[in-house]
Image (tube, rainbow, N blue to C red; front, side, top):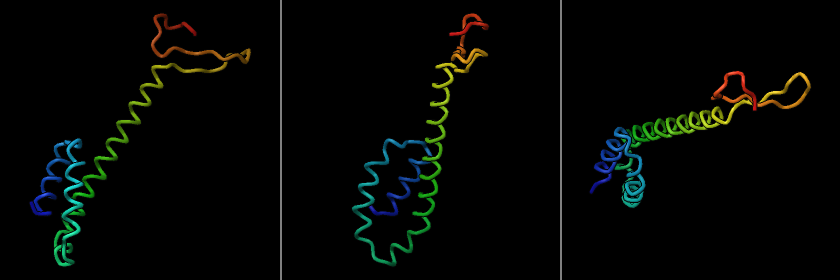
Length: 102
């Protein structure tokens, strides 16, 4: 399979969100990249740049999803504050009694 075909496959996988299949593809790409002439590399530069942008966007999306998951986990754990007496008072984010404190 040619590097151009692998780049097309990579683009399709990135657009489909099939990130679990990119590892094997990266190994195959790396093996073929070592065989390119400078002219072939220049010819593939636009596809490489396009896929790099897609990969960057996928990574940003995964980071955002992880941050959202982290924030939800922290919100479920509740919120802690300090009362007028200086003692720590937890506020349950999902209380059975809306006025309840932990």
